[in-house]
Image: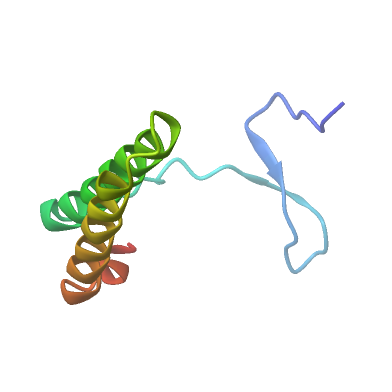
Amino acid sequence: MADQLGSGAVAGVTTEGGQLSQASTEWTPPEPFHGRPVSWVAVSLIMAAFLIGGLALIFGPVWWLFWASAGLAAVGGLLALATHIFDDWY
């Protein structure tokens, strides 16, 4: 079972070495950041392309639809790279 201290005190390492200190009530949660709309468009294009390409292979195979979806995935990937999608990380 986990260490449970019912008094609101948390175990911490202080200069005295392992004394209990009061829990801080000044914590505020970080603001949520869910990416830019262009990033969501790029990810949605890639996901739709994979879904369509997979369905084209299952129900056929319908090769023209598979290759069209592969092209759509490439366009989504290029859009993601061009808009610096990795900069959306907090």
